[in-house]
Image (cartoon, rainbow, N blue to C red; front, side, top):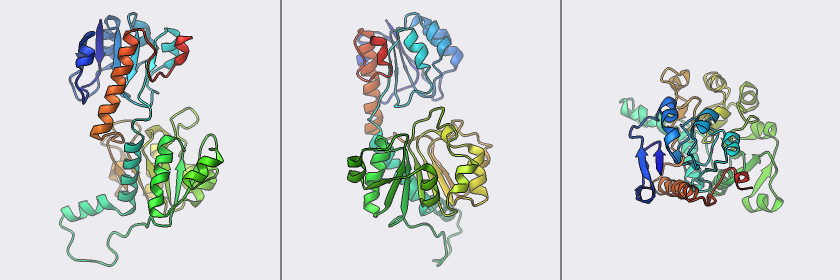
Length: 322
């Protein structure tokens, strides 16, 4: 059997090498779609990333494919219906990156609120001459209102961390949580409009779907307070880039910190990169050593199960087994 891995992983691949011939794309940048399309007819297993387009055409070309395993929680880059129609189980790595992404959310929130990145640039440029009463004044977290858009695993982990800052936490979600969950987390349910108008900080943790694509546009930013700060560690396409630029450039909101962009990577000529009140990190929500290794282990376990004809431990499309 043959396996294709579309990027170097932070883990030894000996478990895969014991059962199949393994080819790993060696470059830092993702392989071209055309290269994948050329390779897929001769492989039995595919271990891919969010940066790989796994569409119907590619899946239909993979006549030997027994499983697709993605090293990520999300899978919007894969045409799941096409995989199911071909009887190909698709694996992913849920749950493992919850705490790491929640940690990064708070790192961004603290950095944006206290203008850490601006302060670093200010110091390195030689502008720091003396202590000044009004230098780089930021926003207080203690006692502020945190609005969470999407109270899934990561949203709940973010809410738990807010207790340490004595914040009032409100949330909105596709479905309201059970009262027991709300009480345990100390959160209050609000509509999106209510959340935007009353939150000092808004953090996005909802999945990217057709309903949440560009969930944040001009209208939503106009509903936010001019002192509000936006955090996005979910998906770039949930926030309309041009609308975010206008909101930050005109002072409609105070600042933003984002770990995800549309497109990725963000183009170097993007007007967003000209803004001092925006922090952009390169999609590192799960980038801790422990988390990335665990993700790789889960992805390998999914792929090995698929190659053996067994049910994937974490399968996106369980209907393939019906």
